[in-house]
Length: 525
Image 1: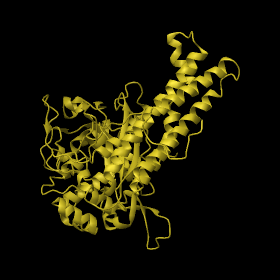
Image 2: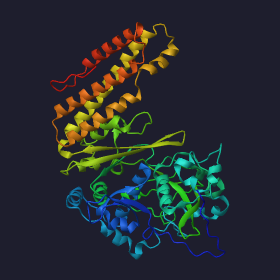
Image 3: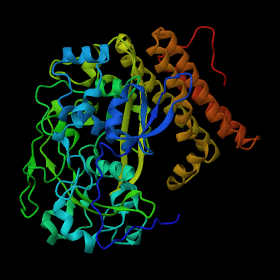
Image 4: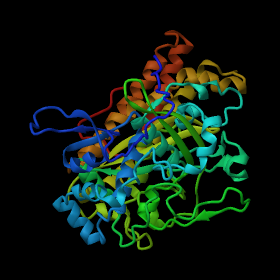
């Protein structure tokens, strides 16, 4: 790709990058003719709030990028005072569809002039202007801002890509910066101690980097924002810039300087990194970001439950993304979050129980190993308040059934292996089993029946019948998956014996499950 030519005038004109008038967010919108499919539009921040009722969803290549854009919009609702104060008012806002166009009206007032400008010389939005003296000599290419390209930030083994001159569009740079603030990987930063202090070179894990985040998805963007606005009388202060007047961390101190979040506006805009972006204009007049600096940011005290409205626990620990386990396999954890508890107080899940319609729960997580981004992971789960207990119970039953079935298939594959290779050495047994066991392909076959089960129950299908249908589908998938592996065995002698024994073991183990089968149906071997 050709690198755009940047203008290098001796006396360049001031650059303005006010998000209120800059097309910085991509969205799917529905026009007056609702028979037509949604159109992709680039909108300014004000236009997003003005048209929130006809925006079906925000658009970004990564789930994390899309999530942090929602967080930005939620934070600005609090910053402008457009948010419910009590759970009862929240329910009214959700059921009556309270307009959020007022957010745009307030953002357009002089109070917010210069506060949402990415290129402001003293208070650049989301950035730390104290890095400005070091930009000319030390500024890197924009790869340093994009987590999937920057890897472990430091890149001691190879950092040629950090000098890539390809600039970022303002839209991409905004999302990348917000992702850094929320999901930044912990570890050594590519920064110098003599810039702002010794502590500036080591970044902490971002506030969302260690757990799965959940967003309730409504019928349109406005509905989604209303669903996820936490009712409060104390919204706190929005972090427009590192130099916006709030007392910030002193990187020269060796003592830990964590601060307490003062409300949801603060939480949605925590500056998890010190970032500075250099704006420039291309020869064709486009505004881009061509250089960046990134260092450590704010440290937070442990968040109380009131500031973890969407948190889901898996056992005693927050639900975390894992490369080897798809999110749907832990769906029972998200439905368990709706369990009434006297010590929990109000949260997203307790509020969703009070509305009489379906919503979708969108879960997002980041998988990173050794400070290197592996993948984003996301999934959507249906929820209907009228069927909360059924969904909670059935999800646990269904996943327990899948686990038991997977265990039965593994046991059957082990029988086939031991019949074929009775004298295999211990170090060979695992490798031999891999040839006979479906592995992750088995769980992939279980996914569609599970989703059908959850959709049917959300729509009001009878619990026992839906679960029995699911069990039959999982059982059939297990038989088919094992049979496909056994077909590769020799069709004579020991090969046939191994197949027969494996299938018999599978039948026996599957019969031990307690989940019902539909009457009149028998799974095919």
